Image (cartoon, rainbow, N blue to C red; front, side, top):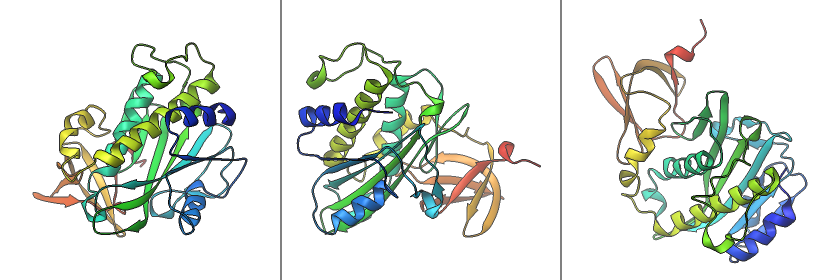
Length: 267
């Protein structure tokens, strides 16, 4: 388990504008930040040792235990809410690239917002808006990571750490986790300032490197209670799902849609 005091010190050095909150237990870090946002809006990072009522896509329960990193980030994006297509995929890409720098297992991005290894589901993320205007929006980005599948102490000293915390050398697993979390929030903060409607198009090729599905693979799309059989055709430049069924190409952008490989279906 990450040591909160060490993590707080890292945030104070590298991300002083972020309010740091560490809780022994909470129903949900995202719920906590959404309630906090009703009273004050400032960049905030919230982490807990135990999350008792976490949730994910379509309000599905996200189970956490001592082998989990559960945290949420409240931050402002300098982009209108209706121009955030591809953001979830870009955050997933940042997460998977950072995780890949910290350990050796092969990782996969499963549209719209999950990360898998060959051992199972490693992480998931959920983005929720709390306030918006014509030019910007405040979002709560909730992330859960099952660290029982990974070893965050396997650091790649060639690429990390960033200059602001370059004094960190060999680390225990706990320090590795703290360093990983700081690095991720640094990436989210950069993304909040630089994201535009065309941002995902610039990283689509990088995303394809980690894609859970192969082009042309037989899959099932679940949409509003329907199960639709067809083939996976990749993502658009806006992060939307391309799906072919009975010769017809369909584009999905809703987070309420999910997709599974036919090979994963147990008969």
